Figure 1 (cartoon, helix red, strand yellow):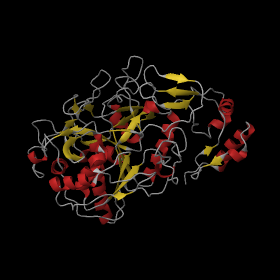
Figure 2 (cartoon, one colour):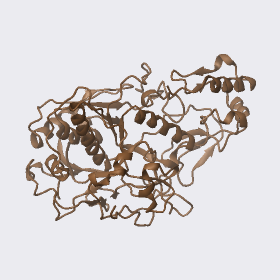
Figure 3 (cartoon, one colour):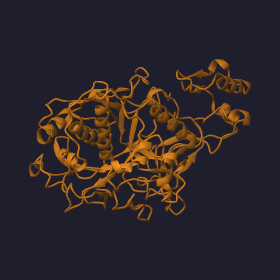
Figure 4 (cartoon, helix red, strand yellow):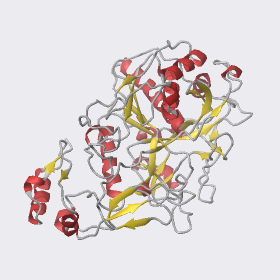
Length: 500
């Protein structure tokens, strides 16, 4: 359905062969979207009229093969989205250096950044699982249901599992069992997600190896959608997987076969699972980290899922209008003075529904309006946390958002689209009761709400809601209006929550 035309493939192949690349070297991917071939550095530099270097991030020692620019004939340009290795791919920190020479194989690309910003221990004994009096201290499943008037789930259409994406983070069954026992005794012990693992991932793991992200996601989703099931899609450390059909095997995506000790060398796994109606993803980076054409191409892949009726929900990040510290500047901001806002990717893709974080502040209750989440360092997390949000430097304003963004006098796609509670969330991680948070919590909450709506629609003989953004912006009355708080960063207060 989405393959390039035969003319496009033939035109590019003819150009490559005319430049000395043997036709037998050129391979087309199974989804027809990629042409790949092996070439020496000299051949690649001659073909693209460029010079390749190895760029190194001095703070992490991560390296990437890249160039400052490349050039292709004008008649070919309309047939090519981008070429890799191409412009530099990894975020280069302050004082980043480039090294001439390509003798080393490119190492795996860095994992997507994700929350939660941290966990703080507390005694579960001080909180009754059904008590709403302490929701300003710790958010339990009962608090979430009261906040958003979520009824207890009763349906479980087998076609309506929710999908939760994880990357290198794994759950422990012991943590789930302890959480269920303390907060949701109606969920049987031993309840666990359906595995949809790729590239060597394995779960559950020993409780000592449990990850904070997986624990947070599963312990938020289960209380809201049970008895419905869901898929836990876990990616191993490195792979060439790309969402439901886009082929990897390029320097932006991790290397396959993985040359690292214990790396995955099994069968290629892409397009091996059918996507669920709703997919929740709490991982992202900054637009700054990747070439524009790569981001546009990836956004098109999300568009394909939206066209097929899937709701893809992403977290907006936990650093306000900035990126994480060191990406690229110490304060996570752009520009020579480190004062320019640093929008997130793929949050800026208009075919995603992006979720920000809210909070029940001290002294407030679940019956009071929430405010934008904004916690200074040490209160309670080790690092500062403020709900991510801003405007894209790449994607223009989508039609469904025109009226809303006009109030901000901005030219790019704005995010988040919605928000949900993302602070002081009750969790069990590595056998201990804790509090966690971040928009990593907000995202599975909102995704669960959409899953519940789909349950009711399916029971009524209707289809899942699919891409929901146009409807959300057309009918804001279905949401609670957040009118208090801001998301500071880059030496500013960021953007303030206002009516509407």
